[in-house]
Image 1 (tube, rainbow, N blue to C red):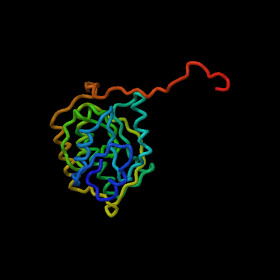
Image 2: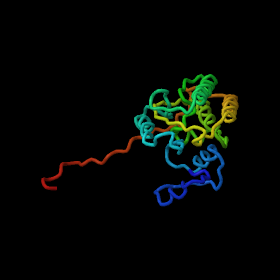
Image 3: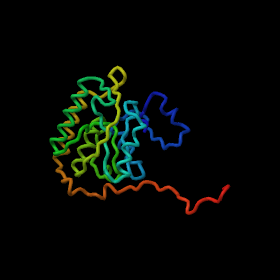
Image 4: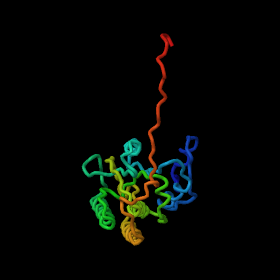
Length: 220
């Protein structure tokens, strides 16, 4: 999803075997996520920031628990001191405060609710009531998931956060908006985890490998 970028993103994507969606002008992260949800096919949707803060090689670590039947939703969490670089104390503490607020509202125990590496079943995402056009969509995704009774399976991922000088855009206004969004979602009520609609997270079986029914003849 190219959200009206002004670098070489569109040029680089030309010719790749991908379905590329593009906004003519930058409309915000939430708008990009909503466009992706609308056009998505398949069983699951991966929310992944393309700013090099996260390593795409670690996406497989989110997929494995789904294929093993161990998880319905998977979050790649940033663990301080384990392959992570936070740009400042403010960002690290802010994430803890925001995550703690979500946990308090929904009786959850998430470690990193604002990670930008999330894997959701597509039916679950389409049941959510989403509408935030900017960064507060992250608060909306997590609290809507919790409202519907789901809890994420967490796997550690590496993280190298950018500073504001390197292009980091999220600020205090986004944090305040996130808190407001979480409170609004909580006012919609919530489903107990044991009563969640499991049909929103259908089981996905790993691909089967073709097997030979008999050994090859010598020299084959």
